[in-house]
Length: 200
Ligand code: MN
Image 1: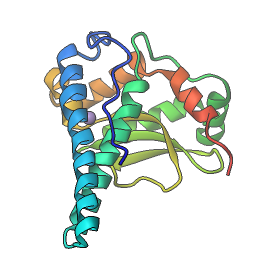
Image 2: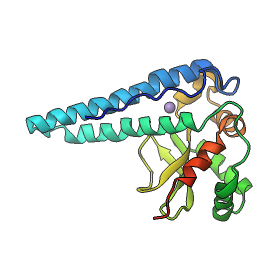
Image 3: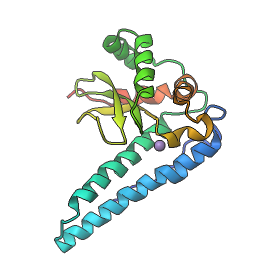
């Protein structure tokens, strides 16, 4: 069976300083993201064993583990790749046009994205997602798997679990979200993802 593998960071662990500290990035990638990879693979193994044994007594549990850990792995992989040193700024091109058409303006989009991400209840993600008609929506995903829209592709994801920011920013989630959007977001990668979303 094909297993998930932790993707390496595409930048040095301290490359996002001072906005994202090396200690948090190292733990977040090497420990937290790795744990989601491990949890997803373990759930696949358990379901393999259940099929062999014909014993589905725990199928609900392991199915939930796949959604949680698999979702965590997928979202973290997207997260690392939509950050870069010297990021921030604004989206360009087709994505900028689509944002303006959907949200009224880049500025209105930016305000909603920050507000929605800051207001995620508990542990979760602020996400810009593209739908089957290449329309856009800002989602508040709780944990890694709740409040997603089926068939919608996340093109920008911002992790607001406390493990993502607490060592440096403590309870100040808004400062972390501002740091990501002002200094770290890789809009070229988000544009690339949007360009790959085909109209259904
Ligand atoms: Mn995380």
